[in-house]
Amino acid sequence: MFDDRSPDSTVHYRHTNAGVRVAVLPATCKVGAHSLHTVGYKARVDRVAGVVRISCDSCAEVPDVDHFWVLRTAGAIPDLAELDDEPCGHIVPLMIDPRGRGRFPSSADRTAEAQPRRSGSP
Ligand SMILES: [Zn+2]
Image (cartoon, rainbow, N blue to C red):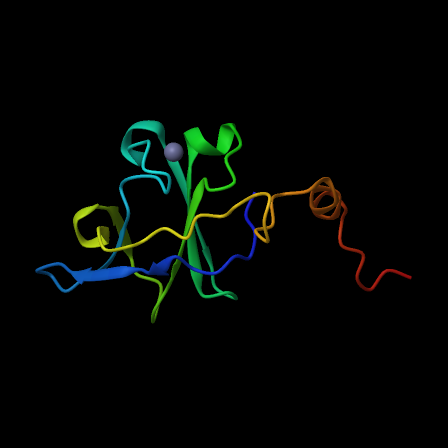
C-alpha cells in the first residue's frame, strides 16, 4: 500500500490552550481531488522512518500511485491529530511518475509482502 518515497514535507504541530500537542494533517488528498473528511483516509505513523503516511480512501481504490501524503514527524507522537488545510497550504506535493523512477507497486512487491517472515525457524 505504501512505499518508502521521500517525504512531501513535515507535519505541522500546534498546541491547544490546554497545552496538548496536536499534529495538523492535510484535509485534502494529495492529488487535490477529495476532502479526506468526506471520502475517508488512513493515517499510519512509521516510527522507524520517522514519517506519517496519510492515504486518501478514494484515490487508494483506483489505485492512484499518489494516493498518500508522506510527512516527516518531529519529536514525540502527539496525543491528537486533526485535518486542516490552512497550515498545510504551503506543502508542494511530490508527485510520483509511475513510468519514471517512482516505485509503482509492482507484483514483485506484493508477493514479498504476502509472504510470512521466517526469521529464526529451524
Ligand atoms: Zn483522493
